[in-house]
Length: 319
Length: 131
Image (tube, rainbow over all chains, first blue to last red; front, side, top):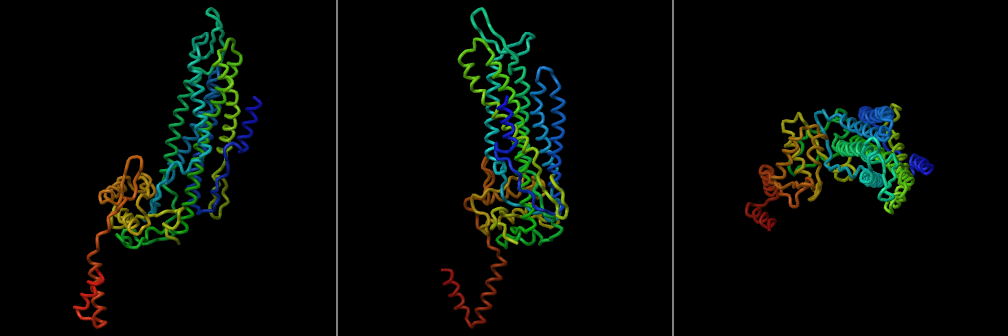
C-alpha cells in the first residue's frame, strides 16, 4: 500500500514518463488563439464531466464494481472531449486556402516512451484479467468468478474473495476495449482535423489557379511567416492533444490494473493450498500495483497541463 | 518569406482560390505537377491523405480525390494500400507549351537577324545546338 502511494507521488511529480509542459506558449493572433483554446476547452470539459461521472459511478454497486469502473469512465470522457475539441476546429472558409503537403502521421505526435509504457500496462491488464477470469469460481450467491477456490484435498477446498474474475473483469474489459477504440478515433481526429490557418484576409496573395501553371513558378509553395507561426501552433496543439489521448488511455488502464493486481495478490496471499503457479502469480503481481500507480500519477499530471496558448495582446492563460 | 520546400518544418504547400474560374481539383493538380517538376517534391515523397488535404483546404474529399486520381492516371502519383499516396518513381515530363516555344523561337530568330546572321547560318547554329 505504501509502495503504491509512493509510486503515485513519483508519477505525479513527472519522473514517470517524461511529462512536461508543451511549448505552445508562443503569442499568436487572437483568432488563432481562440481556435486553439476551443480545442482545450472541450478537452477540459471532458475531464470535468468525467470527474463527475467517476464520482457518481464509484458509489454504484457496493461490491466495488463502480469504484473499478470510475477511472476508465473518466478516461472515456477525456477521450470524448478530445474528439469534440478536434472536431470543433473550423474548416477554412476564406477565398484562398493554403495547405501543407506533408502527410501527418499519428506516430509523429505520440510521446513514444509513454505510449510504450501504456501499451505494456494494457497488456499487463489483459493478462491479469484473463488469468483471473480463468481461475475464478462462483461465489455463494452464484456471481461468476467472484471467488478464488483452491482444492486442498479431494474432499476439502478453500474459497476466498473478492477475486477479480468475470464479475469484475467482464465489465472492465468491455469499458477498456471501448476506450481503446475511442482513443483510436481520437488520434485520427487529431491528425485529420483542419490545420489552424493564418487569416488570409490580412495578406491577400495571387490567385492560386492563374499564377501557377505546369512547369511555371512555384509561387504556391511559398509559406509566409505568419503562416509558419500558425503551423508551429498547430503542430504543438496536435502534440498536446495526442499526449492527452495517451494520458487518458493510461487513466483507462492504470487504476483497474492497480485494483485487479492488488485484489488478486491479496486473495492469493490469503489462500490455503495454493498450487505453485499461484505462488508465481502472486510474486509477479506484487510489483504491478506500484508501477500502475506511477502511471496513474503521470496520467493525472498530464491531464492537468494546460495548452498554454496566448493571444496577441491578451494575457489569456491555459486553454 | 521562405520557400516552403527549403523549410523542413513546413514542407511544400499549395493554395486553392475557390473564387478562381479554374476548378479547385485542377488547381491542386497543377500545383502538385509544378512542385514535382521543380523538384520541391521528389519521387517517393509521401503526400497527405485525401481527407487530410480536404480538411486543410476546406474542400470536399471528392475534390481532392479527383485531383489525386488524375495525377495517378498520368503517372505523377502512386497510391498503394498501407503505403499511402507517393510521388511516382518516374514522373512524366510536362508536355511542351507550343505557344511559349514559338515565342522563344521568334525571339531567337529576331535577335540573330539583328546580329546580321542569314537564315542558313541561323539554321546551322540551331542544328549545332541540338546536337
